[in-house]
Amino acid sequence: MMTFESLKLSAQLLLNIEEQGYKEPYPVQLEVIPDVLEGKDIIGIAKTGSGKTASYVLPILQRLEKAKTKNRFANVLVLVPTRELAVQVQEVFYLFSKELAYPAKSMAVFGGVAINPQMKRMSNVNILVATPGRLLELTRSNAVNLSKVSTFVMDEADKLLNLGFQKELDDILKLLPKKRQNLLFSATLSPEVKNIEKILLNKEDFATKESQAIVKETEEIEEDILINQTGYFVSQEKKGPLLRHLIKEKEMKQVLVFTSSIFQADQLTAKLRKNGIDARAIHSKKSQGSRQESLTLFKNNKINVLVATDLLARGIDIQFLPFVVNYELPRSPKDFIHRIGRTGRAENPGEAITLVTEEDKHHFRVIQKKMKQWVTMVDSENLNF
Ligand code: AMP
Image (cartoon, rainbow, N blue to C red):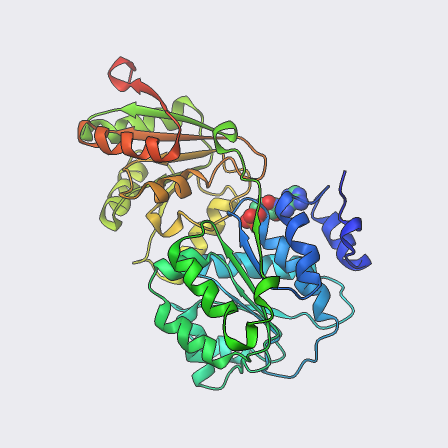
């Protein structure tokens, strides 16, 4: 058995790992940690749920021991596509930074909330986890300087690129020093990701480094084993009653329900609440405060149902989430896979339920084909509800 000890992590980090209850490294951690420790550039093809966050957080924290720190000059920059992911990644840095003998102050910055408190808290931060827009605002007001960044991480690079952050990304890259370590993580190696890989690694300064960039294909978590999938044929009008029936029947205490639109998310939430089910909606029209609050309540089992748009389909790690329901199908099969990937993570089995109307049938077949998996279908007409 490979152990964290064999990865040459420092004693304090090993203690912090033990405290988290991690028994042994996940495959992505075995692959990535040694190279990051050596200062190499990495392209990690790893999904959320694989343990990729710790795979860069741990070696980065160890390397920080040797970093020169200076107020307002970040040593490490982690770029992420969403606010929630920023908070989540910073939490992992925080957990593993405990009791370290050297400064490892991390902070998450993202838009949608006031900028002033973030500027004030910026002093002596050496690990910055940021969404692109807010990061640029902060650099423009000189709250942070990126010219001393020694390690640059792009987490969920595919999402960053899909969301049209290219312009921001270009601006950010200009602010980084040429000599730095680049760590790129993505669920897929899409053409956009390959392109950014070139930008990051093929610049003149990196010509020698190019051969060192190692693509790490990690074992995928076997979704078909961990995620038990069922589909229900149902009419549009009966979706609400069916969902309520399933929540009761399966005694769902924690279920993430996906809708395709903000409107539908709000409407469904209202309906559930009217029927005495503790639900909250989370989507891009909600304030950042409300989004964070709902997510925390849900994570801590204080509410049973979280209704979300695809904003949440990626990146969010809810430990032991037992149920995901697709109330409506997403347009893209990729989003479907990301949605159901919220459950059955990190070796805990989960159940993914998809409601399929007559009009959805064709599209659902397309999705299943892409997934290379056929889902057992139940006709809800035969159910008593
Ligand atoms: P991530 O892919 O980074 O979002 O991690 C998914 C989940 O796996 C998180 O809840 C981590 O705390 C957990 N995790 C990561 N590495 C390990 C490990 N080696 N052993 C047990 N759990 C882990």
